[in-house]
Image (tube, rainbow, N blue to C red; front, side):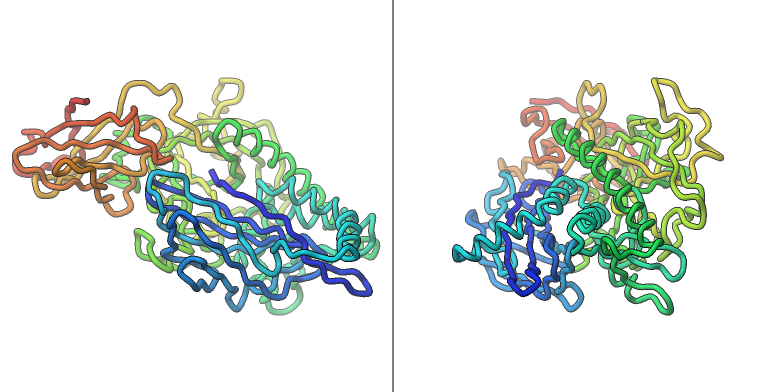
Length: 537
């Protein structure tokens, strides 16, 4: 779950028309483990004029260091400074940009530090009494927009921000929102979380700013202004308002789920036949899973870019990392709720919107059906589902007709009632969990290459630590198969390990698991997996 602090600051630019830029700067922890983390810094322009350039700086107090960044130019060695790249220096009114960071914690085993973000567009600059008066007046005139943005922040939706700006403009007559006119087809909201390609936010397709503005022929970025909209713009504004309502509902859902420990995601869905042989992307054979219901997460999040990058993802390529997160989300459980049905074309084509050329998204009696799945595989395909929809889930096909409403399977989502529905989902702990983990030797395991697999996890797995010469050392992850690790060879003794869950906490209060390579392996294990017996202390 993303953790963040928000710093609300206003930078006023007083002119005859009293236009201003108002920046909401956020430092968010996207993911973290025992000794590291990934984060993003987001600048949201909630004023009525564009931010034309920005420069941010921050400093860690606990020894945290940054090892890589993306979508910004980073300088310094604490304090750090960030400047935009060529394409993201301008932050249009009502829009947001973000850049990413990967770092090493100053103190392993603790929460990643969240520093104060400072800069010209989001600094606590003092102001004179007359400026304060103007600020108060301006703040009053935009309070509707600010409140709306705050309410929609958990779902990170530009569509919601756009519609709230349109709503504000109808009463004030001065603020315009922007949308994308896609050729002569129709108008779409601009994506907040990506600059290129097609995305999925607030229950509808959105288009990155660069993709929209770069299209040849008719179309491009258009302004929707209160009191002066054409009939098509009015229709678009109405649609955007509807999107805002949907976003508000999603925000409430997210807020509710956050209190129980999981953020709610909204995305596209697809299905596939079976895991690879002998292992799925997490390193677990299909027959060894704890449940027949499994999903794949996206390896990459690269909207509008359909290249492949080496796995596991490292260095500068981390800007394209997806929810699979190099296997760090393997073995976790998700609870999925079916959403709307697409009456149109929903084929995942590159650089095409989801659900196009038809009646669009509609609710039906399958909407609201739920089922729990385990994360067991990865989706690295070069289609818009696996690249443009950040939280896309790829379901085991046989599970679709087993989604339940009021405890009964729906029975017939396939073949005619699915069409890659949109969904909402959240991470959960393993339902009705009991017992302990299972440990297996993998094919090819031997004394000098002891590769293991761990399943039956309550809340995922982020690390395996091995006791070597009376010290705990991190075991090497087996490529990006998130549940497989390669231990250090042991001569004349047993393997002793302990496991950390997705939050970096030792499972079962630090329980130690002691085992040997089974005698049946002889010199080398030949079966895909062979379960080992262990003792604990």
